[in-house]
View (cartoon, rainbow, N blue to C red):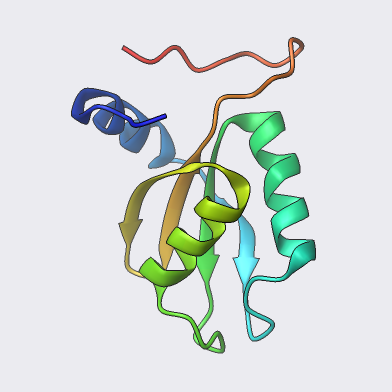
Amino acid sequence: MALTGRQIRQLRSLAHHLNPVIIIGKADINDGTVEQTNESLEAHELIKCSVLDTSSLEVREAANELAARCHAEVVQVIGRKFSLYRATSRTDVKRIELV
């Protein structure tokens, strides 16, 4: 699902106040990280991730790899943090209504 510019702006404004829930460290992106990210995306749709200095990955590289493995969209990359979005399939979660 490709996001439009307007949808990206909306998601960026929502992600601004979020705290990182996924931390990528020296183990880089492994199966546990992908599983935890999938669970967080199903529960929240929009999450913020952080890449520590000990990681061998660049922030943009980590964002693209994690998004590809989780079938999500990279919303924004700023500094050592990035945001991911994926619509949830759960019915008990309040969904983000994209314009």
